[in-house]
Image (cartoon, rainbow, N blue to C red; front, side, top):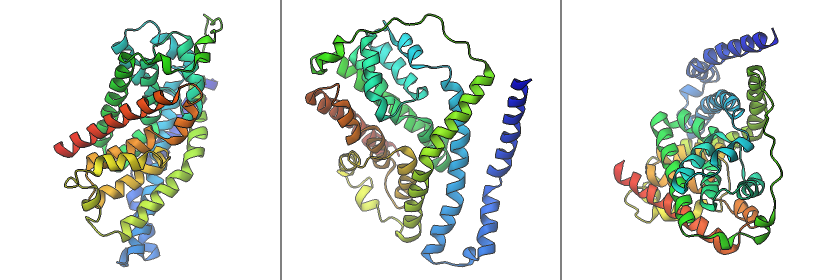
Length: 339
C-alpha cells in the first residue's frame, strides 16, 4: 500500500511537471507582457526576459533528471562498482569505468576515498583514473543543462567526447606504468572483508533515493544556476552579436588551448558554467572551443589537484592533467573542423 502511494505521488508530480514545463514559454511571455518587458528594446529588458525563462526551465529539467538518476544510482553502490571493475583487462576496464562514472555519485571531495578503495581492490591505476575523469565531467547536471539549453545533439556530443577522453586518458596512463607516482601508503592499506550479502532494496526505497538525490543536489546547485544564468543574461542583453568570434571563433587557432588553460583555475560545476557557455556560443564562440572550455572547468580543477595530492605524487598529477588537457584540446579542434 505504501509503495502504491509513493508511485501515485510520483505520477501526480510528473503530470504537474509536464504541465508547467511545456507551458513555460507561454507563462514567461505572459509575465513579460504584464510587466511591459516585451515592449522594451533596451538591453536590460532582453536580459530579464532571458533570466525569467531560463532559470525555471533549467531547474525543472534538473529536478526531473536528478530524480530519475537517483533511482538509477540506487543500483550502483561504490562496492558494486568496485566489484564490476575487478579483474577486467585494461581497455575493457577503462571503458566500463568511464561508463560507470556517469551513474555513480562522485565529486572532487570524495576523490581520495574512492581512489583508495579502487586501488586496495586491485583495480589498475589507469582504470581508476578513467573513473575519476568520467564521474565529475559527465553527470546528470551537465546532461540536463546541455539538453535544455542546446538540444540533444550537443548533449550527445558532450557525453560521447567526454567518455572518449576518460577512456583513452586512463588507458594511456595505464600503459605508461606510473604506479611509482602513487603515494606508497595507499598500497599498504589492506581492504577489509566485504559483505557478500547485500541489503534488499524495494522499488519504494529507490523512489526515496530519487527524492533524496533531488534534495541533496538541487539544494546545492540552484545558486550556481542563478549565478550562471545571471551572468549569461547580462551577456545576452549587453554583449554585441559576434563579439566572441575574434576571441573564441574558428579563425583564432590558439583559442582552444588558451580556453583550456583559462578554464582549469576557474573552478565551477556544470550548473554554473553551462549557461555562460550558451551565451558564448550566441555571441560567436565556436562549438569546439566552448566545449573545450567547459570540459576544462568541470573536469580539471585546481581544488581536485590539491585533493589528489594526498594520494598522488606531483609528477603524476602533472601527467594526469597534461593527458586529459591534451585530449580536451584535440576534441575542441576536431569539433571546430566539423562544425
